[in-house]
Image 1 (cartoon, rainbow, N blue to C red):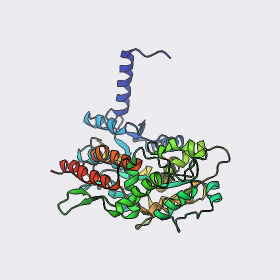
Image 2: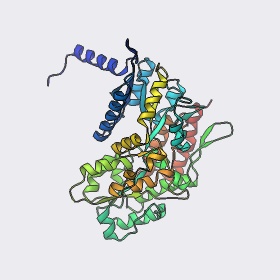
Image 3: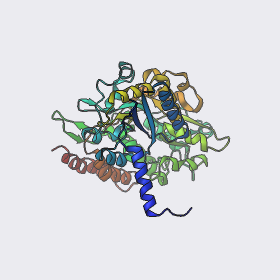
Image 4: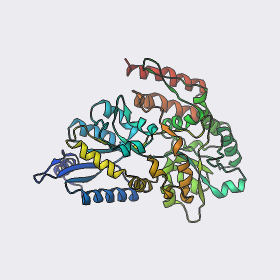
Length: 428
């Protein structure tokens, strides 16, 4: 295909922007039009979302919803531009850890009083905390995923190790011993994909009682790297640098990057988000036997931090009650199950979580669902300045610690000393 002339490209871009972000409103015949930007990307997820939009439109002729396809890769910058330009979609799909700036910036509507009692009571309070900023609620948390271990079944059976269950999990110390037992020349008990190490480290550290961020009586947040915060980082570090039971080459990899080595028999286990099962089903060689195991448990059991997917309403939306009614429809228990199955994730709704489809042994659904009650808001959910702390301080410090370039004392000093200098600028 020949490159498009620059003018034609510019025209096309402007057309797409206007089509996706032009202000919704009421037509001459009184029909309300709402633009819903969805970030669904897997084929099953896109199909489920589009079907639900079509079902709404078929039964609500006075309120029409237009499906707009967005992308996780660029959603923050795209929404920021759209909000600042007054051209944002009416209904916004995002993740809870991306909402703070938009909520405090006045770009999202406070949903307090707009949502049905059925919806607000069905989703647990711990999930609502992920979208609560100040005194307002700025999104509906509807999909979530725990981190689990994806394991090579035959490898574990040959080694004769105890298989963990939600009733009898591995401790972090046992996990370390078992990965050492599973390792050998050119093979590793585990591959940690830690290209983005901060989220995985903080969220898994909740199981050991780690908090890292401490809010004082004055509301100010400080970083404190206590003993409980060290359990997970020390486990990973020692697996890589002491036991040689974790591959050092995957530390800079994303989750998908580890799958070829996993299928090829190089790694016995890979810690991944629950939704990665969909890729494994699609990509695993014929006859490859795998299973889902719960992540190790610590002093606080299976507790993990999560940042659920969310649905919000733009503050500039002229039809907020109609938008809230669509959210109520989209997130009815049966519909929430359809969305969860399409995304290979777990619904937040209590009634949806009871659906038999989420409790089957096939593809590890039952294991993941058993962890749902242990999911808590990610530690940094409401910390102002967290993005800068993560990018400038925590990410490079953790990467160097995991690789063996610095020790635990250096890691603590950088997370605390350098980190608190960053956070202080946001709390003056």
